[in-house]
Image 1 (tube, protein in one colour):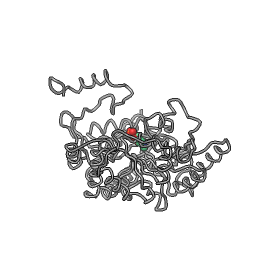
Image 2 (cartoon, rainbow, N blue to C red):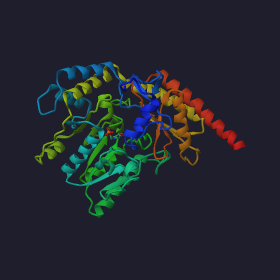
Image 3 (spheres, protein in one colour):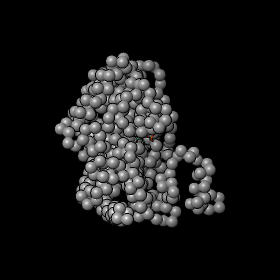
Image 4 (cartoon, rainbow, N blue to C red):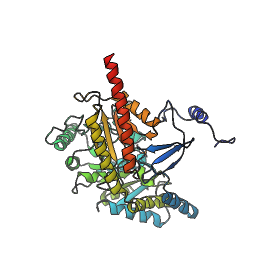
Length: 447
Ligand SMILES: Cc1ncc(COP(=O)(O)O)c(C=O)c1O
């Protein structure tokens, strides 16, 4: 609020243009929403309009969850400081997280953002292996630090380009990728591509530190990786002396429904060497984590160089993190993600049968993508149509976004309190808008 009372939306926008770096983008730049409040799966603008939030995977247990807010407030009243003192919240939280993970991943580092977590994962991998090179997937995004832009094709393609220590493997997208749904063994075929990259690199004396991969690639277009891909790629990277890093920053903490971690979708027998976590951990409070093995953590300590992070793992962050885990359990949000996600998948799949604009519906739990195409045969991305649909949904008070290299994949990743009624409502609105788009196209082609 300004000294003279609340600012108008126009005044806030003008000040933002004046004061904030223009590379910090707004949703709906032509007509941005000014929000002043949020609760559960709703955000409210300055006129009290409620928007259904289908994309905020940070507000994991619901915007402004009262138990999370209370936990932060109570700990703030008592103490907040760095991790150089003994405090129970830090060890309690590490203990709670360790119960969700395979036994081998038993050492924890706490940080403030997903980017910090991935940057530390890079350091751990390199220190442990004494190698430098990293393999990532096409269109991957792992964070905004210099080190992570270097391993994020989603960003570096438009910046300085690819560093010689970075290797990009084909995205295992069985809808639009190299090997598709008709391939008899896509996991093997895509893993063979990783092996090929390693073999070629070794011939040039490159040394591989890690295969760095999101457990379900998100900005690449909500990709569901074929089962068994991680086991095979882990075998290849480990044979070359590298480690497997699973980035769970978007998709962890029960979102996928069947499991707490998305890497577990690959099967019980798969265990990464390093797992990075962020966004949903603190329900909006900046907190992140790296979980790894004793051996990797010890190799990192062996340098004798202290790892110090001013805010990472502070008592307030840990109190919040513990409460988020409590709420997931108490409100059975993982089971809810499975139930509501299955319903949303079913309803969207019904829409696919009705609307030629929908090429593919894929997802697991409350992580779902609707791939819009201009043509079912060529599968060429319907980018403009996706943009229009997102804008129209906003007029209907639904917030959705699109991503993927063609910006044509509608992304569902709502807070886990999203309900069956919400799923029905958003699909009904989507159906109406898709019909509008298709009718407008049909009448244009008649002219
Ligand atoms: C998969 C993935 N990794 C890492 C990050 C970076 O996280 P942060 O923005 O918290 O630094 C993001 C952010 O969007 C992400 O989606």
